[in-house]
Length: 129
Image 1 (cartoon, helix red, strand yellow):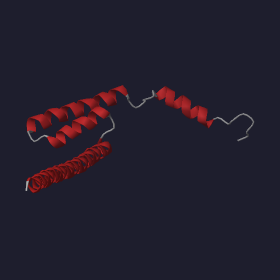
Image 2 (tube, helix red, strand yellow):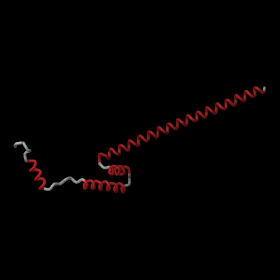
Image 3 (cartoon, rainbow, N blue to C red):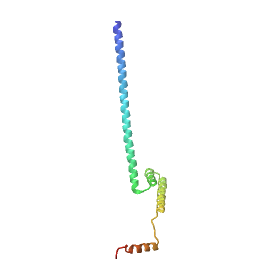
Image 4 (cartoon, rainbow, N blue to C red):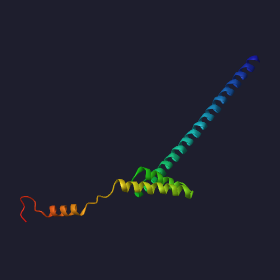
């Protein structure tokens, strides 16, 4: 009788231990699955964010050449308040004005143009006209 009771207790303990192990395993697996799903979502969202950024920069590239203009244009696209848009547009215009003054198209004096034309009209050495 005592042995039966002891065997039942041992069996009961083993069943409880096995049930605990299985529930822990299930909890761990579901947690891992949730983590993987979260990581997938993060990866997807970071991919979409990066493509949006790249598209913005590409779109801006067509409009302006300088890095500062690119960032300002992106700000203009993303902000809603008209004051901020006006201020960033001013920055862009000022930057373009700076560019045009720092890289002016070369203007020659009339004498220099005449001298160039005369030089071009002269025959090359060894060539008869």
